[in-house]
View 1 (tube, rainbow, N blue to C red):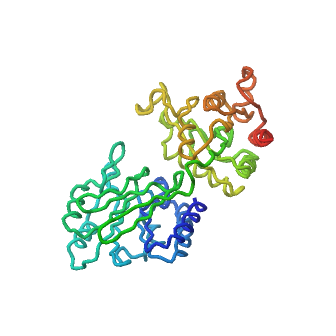
View 2 (tube, rainbow, N blue to C red):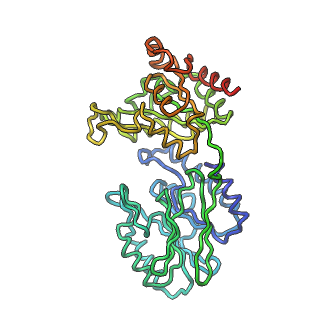
Length: 410
């Protein structure tokens, strides 16, 4: 993401805007680590890296925190950035709100009072409002993205006649620019997702126009990927049903992934974690393990994963009703592969799957690529029972699998 952000900021600098807006969720800070001093230090380091990139842009900047940011860390880095300032004849107002009960965003207390006061004070300048959550449209199916008091906020904005443009984040799909009762609302799509889009807005006396820009072309070739089972392939088997403390990498894993990354492959972990559905651990515990996985790979070889996808359903063994039954993400189903292909613009037919079980091999074949069995984890036992043709190759470990993949490129 730092590389994508640097590229986008170069394009934005060339466009010479008056104002740059970032509408929250600069980091996906994990809820389980709210008081983890090491994670906080890492988050602050990341935010300061972002701040340094932004400082190089010669324009005004507006920034709010999102529900996945750590507010205290965010304030330490960006706390001096004004929430109310003049820019190119407009007044820019930033509102720092939070989620409430049931994950519904709320504009309460001082921020609600400030919002109403700004709409009725003597300053005649047209206003641009920036917040993380949606005032319009109310996208709340499945997860509440819009304020609980969104109708009253819209009514106040329309009645005042002061606000020209209201910019939101939070809803990854984004929402097109729409004029409602004289106020223009727009939600830019999540920049982190392919093709990494950002929007430019132009305001004159009568109109607001938006144009969308993307770092990647829709016609760009899809990337090959190596899909990686986790337990028994990247790490010893005992990490299943446990937290991050005992988690470690198998020998040679980081170097093998570095070689695949350098050859241009996307690296995607696809892991069945029915331990969540069975009630042994929470999804947050699995997330903590994956954070440690990412950290160990970075420390060992400076290698990043493109994505980690986990399936939590446990079929008839589920202790929790929401995780019962078959789910399209659970291998050998291909839901995780298909989501990764959409999210990361991947070529499934040109990709490889590496794992230590017949389930991994079957999922890779169903997805349309080649499958490799490793003898680590359960792999040596699986090899003894493996019918001919179920694996395109059998390797001692991930390093051997990487060697075969790279050799197959010719």
